[in-house]
Image (cartoon, rainbow, N blue to C red; front, top):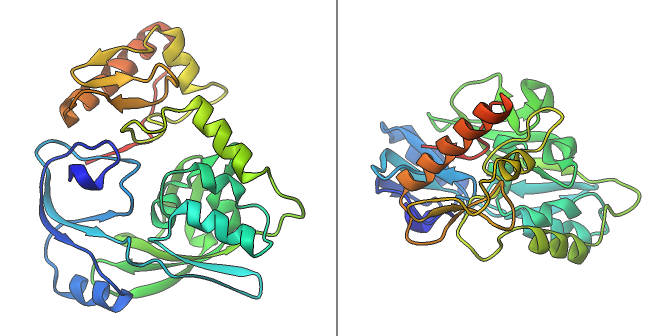
Length: 270
């Protein structure tokens, strides 16, 4: 799974499937009996070295994108950068922050991805999901409990396959180029990482707690706390997934010991 995850680590999946259409995905699920791991860009994912005993389904080919009557229709495999640029080309304001998030629509919906004080679910009108039996549903926002970096569905065993989004701000949040410069100046862009590793605790910042714990630059094996942004872990020297997970646990233990604050992971560990 290393080539499918931005950490560039991870063992082998038992099976792998990339559907080209929603019908292909539905047909596959109807006959599938294995555990499922849905993938987009793999930018918020750590797959352990032992791999995944099931089928990894990569949704990057489900990438249709359009707009009708001011509502943007975006498939799960559309990258957030592409969505942001598309909205700008259509004169729709409010999607600029998405340009700074290295992920896809499906993953963003699953975790309520955000940046610079904005979150994707604030623009969601409705979503389309598919369950493990291949049945497709249209779901309203009220069928999900939305919180900071957390989405709790009322229906189990369903996966996001598209979203209807409304971006209707009067003014742009900020110029996309300026947002990307801000991101590039403060984050280890170009190094293998998963984005933010931890959620920010209430009234605090994970990066500050980690930096104040003198953990910037600290390494276990080939995994290191970024010297540029302390809430990033980078794969600097052929790290293993174990290296990264051990470093995550060390950070949590250190911050807990020093500040009595429990850091919750934003990255999903499989």
